[in-house]
Length: 372
Picture 1 (tube, rainbow, N blue to C red):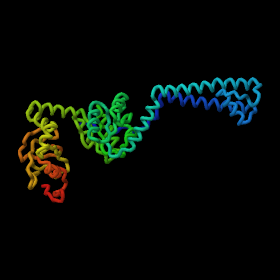
Picture 2 (picture 1 turned 30 degrees about the horizontal axis):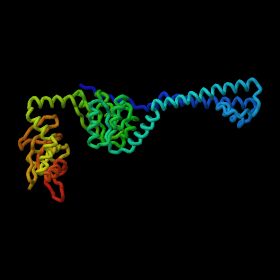
Picture 3 (picture 1 turned 90 degrees about the vertical axis):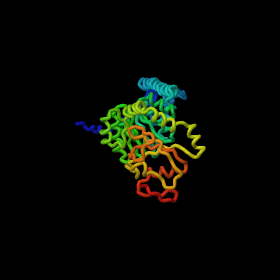
Picture 4 (picture 1 turned 180 degrees about the horizontal axis):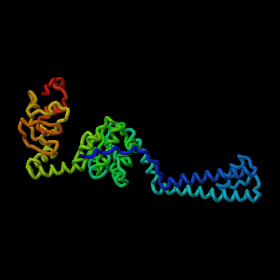
């Protein structure tokens, strides 16, 4: 009996970590203010007025040299003034050194860039959150970018994040299982979350956390072990992709039916062939059978249109990657199947409408079509 994944412990917000130069600036300013406060208290204890004490501290630390308001005669006052000069100068130099290091290291540019990126992420709505910037995540991000789909990449590896940022992706640094990291990626406004981390356990935890934060989110999870699929679905994932299994089935199809696989690959991917077909009013189209589609569970013969100019069903690619060329008309269509069709450009939209129809009847361009 398989053990169900345990819920991860409640995510706690991590304190904001300061980089080296910024830490120096903050520490230097704190030391400077402390020196000023102690010096003012010391002069007040010597009988000075508050405004005179503050004025004396300022001209002493910054070396203006306007002269003392009151004579510094006692040993205690002289010792205090010496300490103010040494400690004040030290704090100022330490603070300026941190600021110069920040400029040299480019920390200021990084901070401004991170602020701009945060603003860009806050503007997104209905976007995709991609958890993981590894090999699978990078390929997926490139496809989303090519398709014009807005997305945000989450990863804890600085090198991967830098590479993703260099490609123009919006990124968030952190652990995707943490709630505050998902909040930074705008999970409340997102429509899809794809978790493609290399560890199945991490994908389970991300799925649980994301589902709790946004119940209406579509979650697509990657799984390396086929036994993890059930756990991911039980954790709240809508779909589970097993890259290893898909790749193995793809290789098997190339070995068992190399001609069919190569032919479909050439027909649907060659741009020159698409251009030639377009000149005579034909085009290839891949239509997917969705789970809520009215034609799911029906035969190929049931998707014919009345009065159409004609179309040819070239093949069917099932959800497990198997491909069938010129399938028989009694082939049953299942959710996830992709039907590859060659037809007239005017008929394709009407045919595509039958794949997305959810009722027995639908209207297309003012014409009622029987979806059955």
